Length: 174
Image (cartoon, rainbow, N blue to C red; front, side, top):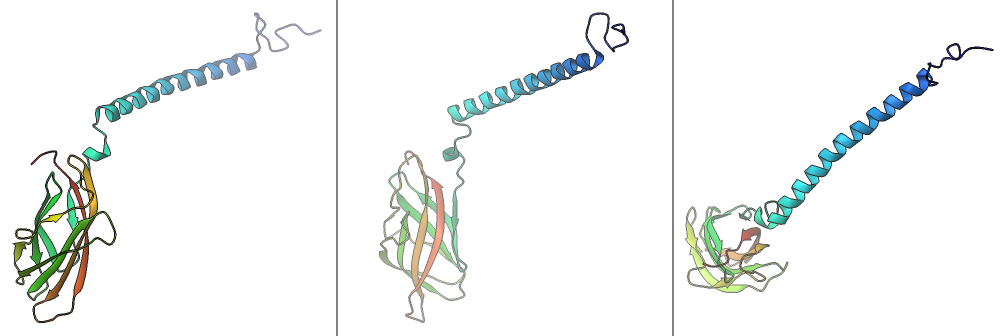
């Protein structure tokens, strides 16, 4: 009969294979525990940032107004009451007559009639004589909608339509 050492066991009764497996298991557990705690701490930090409002998507919405070619927005604003103030530029190469304007979250908003001429290469505050309200606008909330413009060139009566996208953080008060 073989002695314990001959069978590959130590004096305490453990084989080298069992000892290696135990050390590997302990190493794996330490690895999982260390990274587990690190991931848990990161999740807690992210949750606190969301709770405080730092990572709130409402706070990081950029203000933007995108119009089709030929038009530009030199300046724009939506007041706390939802009134649109739009300084519209004309780059069509011909004088443009704005006949209607709408601001809404709907895809087909009702137009407010107007008659504003903008010479080629110039810009004008088109909402100075006509009040345009952005449908669905709430004070202190982010607004995402469309700007719809109906127009024609001064030497033509063919009605055209331009649609742009607006994103704006409406102030709580003016």
